[in-house]
Amino acid sequence: MLRKRLLTALVWIPLVIFAAWFSRPEHQIPWFTLLAAIWGPVAVYEFYRITGVSKNKTLAILGIVWTLLFIVGPHFHYTYYLSILFTSGLIISLIVLVFTRAKEGLFLRWAWMMAGALYVGWLVSLLVSLRIDAGRNWLYLVLFVTFASDSAAYFIGRSFGRRKLAPNISPGKTWEGAAGGLCGAVIMSLLFLLPTPFQLALNYWQAIILGIFISFFGQIGDLAESALKRSGGVKDSGNLMPGHGGLLDRIDSVVFAGVVVYLYYIIIVL
Image (cartoon, rainbow, N blue to C red; front, side, top):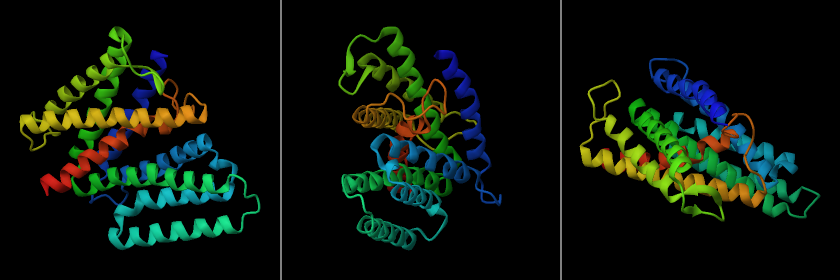
Protein backbone atom coordinates (compact mmCIF):
# COMPACT_ATOMS: atom_id res chain seq x y z
CA MET A 1 0.00 0.00 0.00
CA LEU A 2 2.78 2.43 0.96
CA ARG A 3 4.65 1.72 -2.26
CA LYS A 4 1.53 2.42 -4.32
CA ARG A 5 0.93 5.69 -2.42
CA LEU A 6 4.48 6.87 -3.07
CA LEU A 7 4.46 5.91 -6.76
CA THR A 8 1.13 7.64 -7.31
CA ALA A 9 2.37 10.75 -5.48
CA LEU A 10 5.51 10.82 -7.65
CA VAL A 11 3.28 11.03 -10.73
CA TRP A 12 0.53 13.39 -9.61
CA ILE A 13 2.31 15.91 -7.37
CA PRO A 14 4.79 17.06 -10.07
CA LEU A 15 1.90 17.31 -12.53
CA VAL A 16 -0.04 19.63 -10.21
CA ILE A 17 3.09 21.66 -9.41
CA PHE A 18 3.97 22.17 -13.06
CA ALA A 19 0.39 23.03 -14.00
CA ALA A 20 0.28 25.71 -11.29
CA TRP A 21 3.74 27.04 -12.21
CA PHE A 22 3.05 27.54 -15.92
CA SER A 23 -0.52 28.78 -15.49
CA ARG A 24 0.51 32.41 -15.98
CA PRO A 25 -1.28 35.29 -17.74
CA GLU A 26 1.36 35.47 -20.48
CA HIS A 27 0.56 31.91 -21.49
CA GLN A 28 -2.49 31.32 -23.68
CA ILE A 29 -3.41 28.07 -21.90
CA PRO A 30 -4.29 28.30 -18.16
CA TRP A 31 -2.76 24.94 -17.30
CA PHE A 32 -3.95 24.76 -13.72
CA THR A 33 -7.51 25.56 -14.76
CA LEU A 34 -7.27 22.91 -17.46
CA LEU A 35 -6.09 20.32 -14.94
CA ALA A 36 -8.86 21.33 -12.53
CA ALA A 37 -11.40 21.15 -15.36
CA ILE A 38 -10.38 17.52 -15.96
CA TRP A 39 -10.06 16.55 -12.32
CA GLY A 40 -13.30 18.17 -11.12
CA PRO A 41 -15.83 16.41 -13.39
CA VAL A 42 -14.25 13.03 -12.64
CA ALA A 43 -14.30 13.75 -8.90
CA VAL A 44 -17.93 14.84 -8.96
CA TYR A 45 -18.88 11.73 -10.92
CA GLU A 46 -17.29 9.68 -8.13
CA PHE A 47 -19.42 11.72 -5.72
CA TYR A 48 -22.51 10.89 -7.79
CA ARG A 49 -21.72 7.19 -7.78
CA ILE A 50 -21.49 7.21 -3.99
CA THR A 51 -24.76 9.10 -3.53
CA GLY A 52 -26.75 7.36 -6.27
CA VAL A 53 -27.12 10.37 -8.56
CA SER A 54 -25.39 8.42 -11.36
CA LYS A 55 -28.50 6.22 -11.59
CA ASN A 56 -30.22 9.19 -13.22
CA LYS A 57 -28.03 9.97 -16.23
CA THR A 58 -29.70 13.30 -16.97
CA LEU A 59 -29.10 14.66 -13.47
CA ALA A 60 -25.55 13.28 -13.42
CA ILE A 61 -24.67 14.91 -16.75
CA LEU A 62 -26.23 18.19 -15.64
CA GLY A 63 -24.23 18.11 -12.41
CA ILE A 64 -20.98 17.35 -14.23
CA VAL A 65 -21.53 20.21 -16.67
CA TRP A 66 -22.47 22.54 -13.82
CA THR A 67 -19.29 21.54 -11.96
CA LEU A 68 -17.17 22.28 -15.02
CA LEU A 69 -18.78 25.69 -15.48
CA PHE A 70 -18.05 26.54 -11.83
CA ILE A 71 -14.38 25.62 -12.26
CA VAL A 72 -13.81 27.81 -15.34
CA GLY A 73 -15.93 30.63 -13.89
CA PRO A 74 -13.04 32.69 -12.42
CA HIS A 75 -11.88 33.43 -15.97
CA PHE A 76 -15.10 35.36 -16.66
CA HIS A 77 -16.91 38.35 -15.14
CA TYR A 78 -17.43 36.43 -11.92
CA THR A 79 -20.36 38.22 -10.28
CA TYR A 80 -22.70 38.10 -13.28
CA TYR A 81 -21.41 34.70 -14.33
CA LEU A 82 -22.16 33.18 -10.93
CA SER A 83 -25.62 34.72 -10.81
CA ILE A 84 -26.49 33.21 -14.18
CA LEU A 85 -24.85 29.89 -13.30
CA PHE A 86 -26.65 29.46 -9.97
CA THR A 87 -30.00 30.50 -11.40
CA SER A 88 -29.80 28.42 -14.57
CA GLY A 89 -28.53 25.35 -12.73
CA LEU A 90 -31.36 25.53 -10.23
CA ILE A 91 -34.12 26.13 -12.79
CA ILE A 92 -32.90 23.61 -15.38
CA SER A 93 -32.43 20.88 -12.79
CA LEU A 94 -35.95 21.44 -11.42
CA ILE A 95 -37.35 21.25 -14.95
CA VAL A 96 -35.58 17.91 -15.31
CA LEU A 97 -37.35 16.72 -12.15
CA VAL A 98 -40.75 17.64 -13.56
CA PHE A 99 -40.25 15.66 -16.78
CA THR A 100 -38.58 12.61 -15.22
CA ARG A 101 -40.96 9.64 -15.08
CA ALA A 102 -39.40 7.65 -12.23
CA LYS A 103 -40.18 9.82 -9.20
CA GLU A 104 -39.10 7.52 -6.37
CA GLY A 105 -36.04 8.95 -4.64
CA LEU A 106 -35.72 11.58 -7.36
CA PHE A 107 -35.76 14.65 -5.13
CA LEU A 108 -33.02 13.17 -2.92
CA ARG A 109 -30.87 12.54 -6.00
CA TRP A 110 -31.51 16.11 -7.14
CA ALA A 111 -30.34 17.39 -3.73
CA TRP A 112 -27.18 15.27 -3.96
CA MET A 113 -26.61 16.51 -7.51
CA MET A 114 -26.70 20.10 -6.29
CA ALA A 115 -24.49 19.26 -3.31
CA GLY A 116 -21.87 17.56 -5.50
CA ALA A 117 -21.64 20.44 -7.94
CA LEU A 118 -21.19 22.91 -5.09
CA TYR A 119 -18.84 20.70 -3.09
CA VAL A 120 -16.52 19.96 -6.00
CA GLY A 121 -17.20 22.68 -8.57
CA TRP A 122 -17.56 25.71 -6.31
CA LEU A 123 -14.75 24.81 -3.93
CA VAL A 124 -12.31 23.88 -6.72
CA SER A 125 -13.17 27.18 -8.42
CA LEU A 126 -11.79 28.96 -5.34
CA LEU A 127 -8.44 27.28 -5.97
CA VAL A 128 -8.56 28.55 -9.56
CA SER A 129 -9.45 32.03 -8.25
CA LEU A 130 -6.56 31.87 -5.81
CA ARG A 131 -4.14 31.07 -8.64
CA ILE A 132 -5.48 33.91 -10.79
CA ASP A 133 -5.87 36.59 -8.11
CA ALA A 134 -3.11 35.82 -5.63
CA GLY A 135 -0.49 34.04 -7.73
CA ARG A 136 1.10 30.63 -7.75
CA ASN A 137 2.83 30.83 -4.36
CA TRP A 138 -0.46 31.18 -2.48
CA LEU A 139 -1.76 28.17 -4.34
CA TYR A 140 1.45 26.31 -3.53
CA LEU A 141 0.92 27.19 0.12
CA VAL A 142 -2.41 25.38 0.02
CA LEU A 143 -1.05 22.37 -1.87
CA PHE A 144 2.28 21.87 -0.10
CA VAL A 145 0.99 22.49 3.42
CA THR A 146 -1.96 20.17 2.84
CA PHE A 147 0.30 17.46 1.42
CA ALA A 148 2.66 17.87 4.39
CA SER A 149 -0.24 17.67 6.82
CA ASP A 150 -1.71 14.56 5.17
CA SER A 151 1.66 12.82 4.98
CA ALA A 152 2.67 13.64 8.55
CA ALA A 153 -0.73 12.55 9.85
CA TYR A 154 -0.47 9.28 7.92
CA PHE A 155 3.02 8.32 9.08
CA ILE A 156 2.67 9.56 12.67
CA GLY A 157 -0.71 7.88 12.95
CA ARG A 158 0.65 4.57 11.66
CA SER A 159 3.66 4.70 13.97
CA PHE A 160 2.27 6.16 17.20
CA GLY A 161 -1.50 6.32 16.83
CA ARG A 162 -3.43 4.86 19.77
CA ARG A 163 -6.47 7.04 20.46
CA LYS A 164 -9.13 7.04 17.76
CA LEU A 165 -10.08 10.46 16.41
CA ALA A 166 -13.45 9.64 14.84
CA PRO A 167 -14.05 5.88 15.05
CA ASN A 168 -17.59 6.10 13.68
CA ILE A 169 -16.43 7.95 10.57
CA SER A 170 -12.83 6.95 9.89
CA PRO A 171 -11.50 4.23 12.24
CA GLY A 172 -7.93 4.58 10.96
CA LYS A 173 -7.49 8.19 12.05
CA THR A 174 -6.03 8.97 15.47
CA TRP A 175 -5.46 12.00 17.66
CA GLU A 176 -1.72 11.37 17.44
CA GLY A 177 -1.91 11.44 13.65
CA ALA A 178 -3.96 14.64 13.72
CA ALA A 179 -1.38 16.30 15.98
CA GLY A 180 1.39 15.10 13.66
CA GLY A 181 -0.48 16.61 10.74
CA LEU A 182 -0.65 19.98 12.50
CA CYS A 183 3.09 19.91 13.17
CA GLY A 184 3.91 18.91 9.61
CA ALA A 185 1.69 21.68 8.26
CA VAL A 186 3.27 24.36 10.45
CA ILE A 187 6.80 23.30 9.47
CA MET A 188 5.93 23.39 5.77
CA SER A 189 4.16 26.74 6.16
CA LEU A 190 7.26 28.24 7.82
CA LEU A 191 9.35 27.18 4.83
CA PHE A 192 7.45 29.75 2.77
CA LEU A 193 9.26 32.46 4.74
CA LEU A 194 12.65 31.43 3.34
CA PRO A 195 14.18 33.50 0.51
CA THR A 196 13.26 31.12 -2.32
CA PRO A 197 11.08 31.49 -5.45
CA PHE A 198 8.19 30.28 -3.23
CA GLN A 199 8.57 32.98 -0.57
CA LEU A 200 5.46 34.76 0.70
CA ALA A 201 5.25 38.09 2.53
CA LEU A 202 4.23 36.60 5.86
CA ASN A 203 5.61 36.90 9.37
CA TYR A 204 6.24 33.91 11.62
CA TRP A 205 2.92 34.12 13.43
CA GLN A 206 0.96 34.40 10.19
CA ALA A 207 2.74 31.37 8.78
CA ILE A 208 2.11 29.37 11.94
CA ILE A 209 -1.57 30.33 12.10
CA LEU A 210 -2.09 29.56 8.41
CA GLY A 211 -0.36 26.21 8.83
CA ILE A 212 -2.65 25.31 11.74
CA PHE A 213 -5.77 26.45 9.91
CA ILE A 214 -4.86 24.62 6.70
CA SER A 215 -4.20 21.40 8.59
CA PHE A 216 -7.29 21.69 10.79
CA PHE A 217 -9.74 22.41 7.99
CA GLY A 218 -8.00 19.99 5.66
CA GLN A 219 -8.51 17.20 8.19
CA ILE A 220 -12.13 18.29 8.64
CA GLY A 221 -12.56 18.04 4.87
CA ASP A 222 -11.06 14.56 4.93
CA LEU A 223 -13.46 13.48 7.67
CA ALA A 224 -16.41 15.01 5.84
CA GLU A 225 -15.65 12.94 2.76
CA SER A 226 -15.12 9.86 4.93
CA ALA A 227 -18.60 10.41 6.38
CA LEU A 228 -19.96 10.64 2.83
CA LYS A 229 -18.28 7.37 1.82
CA ARG A 230 -19.47 5.62 4.98
CA SER A 231 -23.05 6.69 4.25
CA GLY A 232 -22.64 5.28 0.74
CA GLY A 233 -21.06 2.05 1.97
CA VAL A 234 -17.78 2.45 0.07
CA LYS A 235 -14.15 2.58 1.21
CA ASP A 236 -12.76 4.75 -1.61
CA SER A 237 -14.43 7.10 -4.06
CA GLY A 238 -12.66 5.34 -6.95
CA ASN A 239 -9.49 3.54 -8.00
CA LEU A 240 -7.83 5.98 -10.39
CA MET A 241 -5.06 6.71 -7.89
CA PRO A 242 -3.63 3.43 -6.57
CA GLY A 243 -2.92 3.61 -2.85
CA HIS A 244 -4.97 6.78 -2.49
CA GLY A 245 -8.38 5.88 -3.92
CA GLY A 246 -10.21 8.15 -6.33
CA LEU A 247 -9.77 11.73 -7.42
CA LEU A 248 -12.38 12.85 -4.90
CA ASP A 249 -10.28 11.27 -2.15
CA ARG A 250 -7.34 13.50 -3.11
CA ILE A 251 -9.13 16.83 -3.13
CA ASP A 252 -11.24 16.41 0.01
CA SER A 253 -8.68 18.13 2.24
CA VAL A 254 -7.26 20.47 -0.42
CA VAL A 255 -10.57 22.18 -1.20
CA PHE A 256 -11.30 22.88 2.48
CA ALA A 257 -7.78 24.22 2.96
CA GLY A 258 -8.20 26.31 -0.18
CA VAL A 259 -11.26 28.02 1.28
CA VAL A 260 -9.27 29.08 4.36
CA VAL A 261 -6.37 30.52 2.38
CA TYR A 262 -8.63 32.21 -0.17
CA LEU A 263 -10.63 33.91 2.60
CA TYR A 264 -7.41 34.95 4.34
CA TYR A 265 -6.10 36.45 1.10
CA ILE A 266 -9.22 38.46 0.20
CA ILE A 267 -9.90 39.61 3.79
CA ILE A 268 -6.41 40.20 5.21
CA VAL A 269 -4.05 40.64 2.28
CA LEU A 270 -6.15 42.66 -0.16
